[in-house]
Length: 151
Image 1 (cartoon, rainbow, N blue to C red):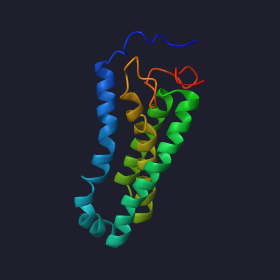
Image 2: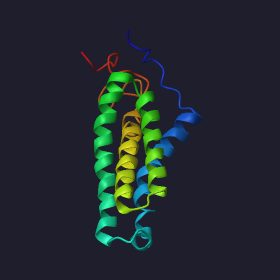
Image 3: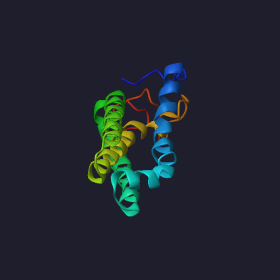
Image 4: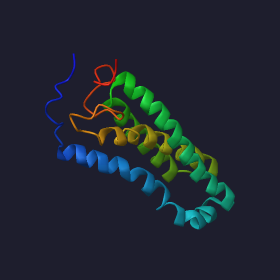
């Protein structure tokens, strides 16, 4: 059954807030984190190279999260991967905050990136809410199986 495409999808305050929060993950996780590198180096008693590796771990996690999140959303819908990704990102942030050493911080940053990538990958797909737009990306409210561009 195809969804009714004659009316545009409603843009609610909840959708706008969810998109804003999901889009804020990468800038907060990188731009606001980088100035703290010298302090983290001293506090954890490690090298600046190891602390820089935490940024790499975040981006690797973000890339893997987007691959997993995209695949999962095709199978399970958009909501579950977004919520699970947000929870994993939050867990990663808690691990980072409580990290006693650089190894635990690396794992926390990887988790944080993975969760953020899983939760935030769909923002671009949701930006298309036009009822006449049948190209990639599909609108948020349609499922993979009922998308009008799918044979």
